Length: 173
Image: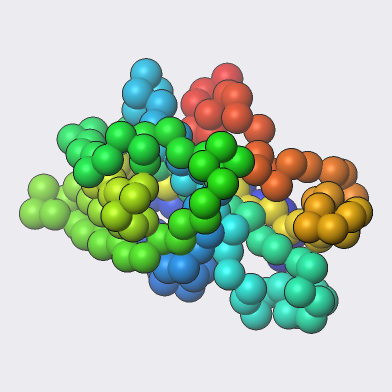
């Protein structure tokens, strides 16, 4: 279960991944709409799961996930906050409360993701989903103060930005 990146294209693979990886109740760390690249990113902290228990039953392990939806179109926002949200700025945590994934009658992938009434929801058509996951371990360095390290490489990273922001995933180099 090392850190990894996968590309999902088929409805069945995307549905299987989202259902099996606890999308619901995932802590939303950030969202980013990249209009010029036609991408929408969700960075989440996955609720404690069986994969982590196999590594270490310690509660100091966390799994971070970047969901990058590519070639999005027909996007609709119920709030401007969800276009560019970051937990480090907002200081109020939010979790994904619901989502709906469909394959419409034209064979287009459609998703609607609802966070809550404050952050809002977003819906769009897309072609594929690129997923990046990272397992982190926290080390307490003071009262309510932690540092995060990659479980496999011991490289330190920022909890609020566990994945590099540029270039966006899904872009060709």
